[in-house]
Length: 308
Image 1 (cartoon, rainbow, N blue to C red):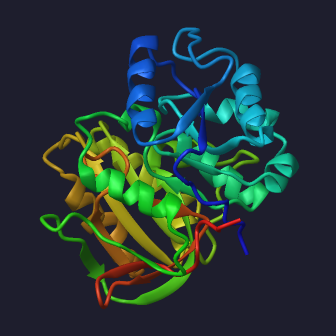
Image 2: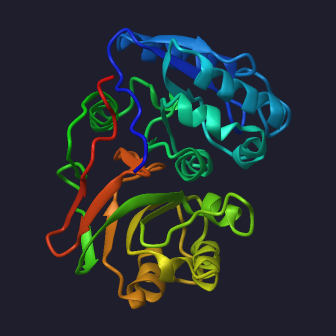
């Protein structure tokens, strides 16, 4: 069974790290101010403000910041500033035994999902595909904060994951399967194939989402997963949004799902608000979920945080 980290309480400390692409200082500081207004304290990693082209410093430095947060007894939640690219580069420099023995909440999406899945796979830690520091803005929908703080602060044995009322989840293939949730950003998932950090999805529920890729590129990634046997190995599939993904040659994202995913015959739920979309459901990577597409329900069936 995966390890549920300690819950977040008012007055706890959040460790801020930059693990992939850089974010400018003014934005980081403004978002920290919003985060602190929720009643949380912050510690900023040594290399958070660094910039080296499209990376926020060296792989070793970014990994060192993350390890420092896991080893800091004051830190309850680790929050990356953003995703971007380059998160895979820190993985060889992480000590997964130390992480396993110092479980903490960590949340993110986009390229951060490479890390979230690695932490589950190699440190047995439940992580959260949800908000990053950049999302702590006065313009962020209330739904996103409700999802985030419910997932991080309430140790319930079960939690129903629902879209905002105006956006229906759509079950395409009926079924009822239960298993750990893995996956995240499609580009990042494909990047792990053939590496030591390739995601094991055998008998697991796979969630996928993408952003700002034309549909012919999305097709290429989905086809890559299919040829690698990943889509056949999973127990069920959740297709999130493809935000800003333009049609290519007249083919839409929904048509890709129809042509590539539906024929697999796996229990399939689509139109789940995830990650890069305006609305962001909080999805626990590594936690056991029940995907009941006959009833059109997605339920986390174990606590994802604990009171200790």
